[in-house]
Length: 295
Image (tube, rainbow, N blue to C red; front, side, top):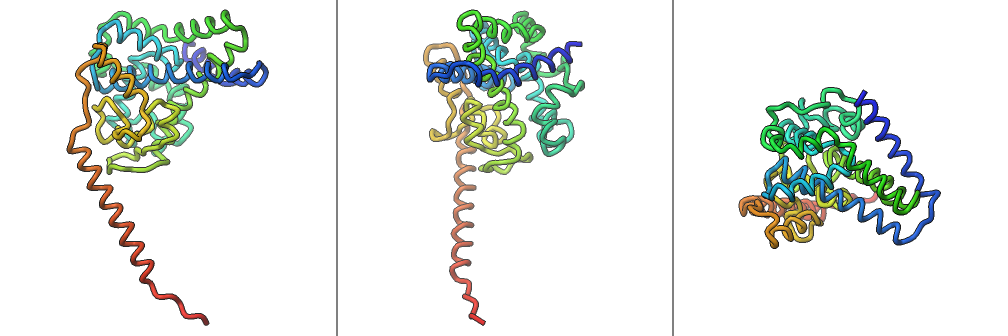
């Protein structure tokens, strides 16, 4: 029953996002969409992903809960469920056992089916490291069990404050865009993009998904070194979540930030140089090829 309710609510929000076509438009509403989308995106990637799943930094219990609450408001189930499945994804990336690999199970199942339809992923085992280590906090277990409450409160809050216009631009549309931005990391980033590193999976870097998923699109970087607090390994790789974590560290809200090791940067430099040499060699061979004589 809970599974059917979750599916029904998910599709209700997805289709109801079209209400933005029938309510007043303004630049302020675009700003409201951006705030609702990106603040919750940072909540997901900062807390669910880099903190719970990968232990990329540390933070206190109150800060941990506040960011978890923001992430849960994204309507992508609870923090322990989300992070627990992500750990499983890395354990079996693009192999049997990966909950959402487009290589193994196809695009739809990897994008939505595993989240909505596959009963195998209803729960996370108690031996999962996320549940084992963070399930001791009653407030996180509460969020995980009642993951519907934060998005419901956000929806009610936007409606009570600004009616259908605020509900459409502040909850429905950004919840839809954020869902697909997050799920695109599972699908698009294992099919399209560049590969700086040679990993055992098909992870790829993609600037478009990096923008909409608050820095998560540097997926090949991340699969090469999962522990880093930043996914954009270089300053030109858009990663706002990293800057939020860094700002938190400056005021004492985060500490023990895990850096990208020098050996990883050296590996990237060697591989980049090798690709440049190969491209130059191919260009020289093309230039040196004899022209065919006209018949």
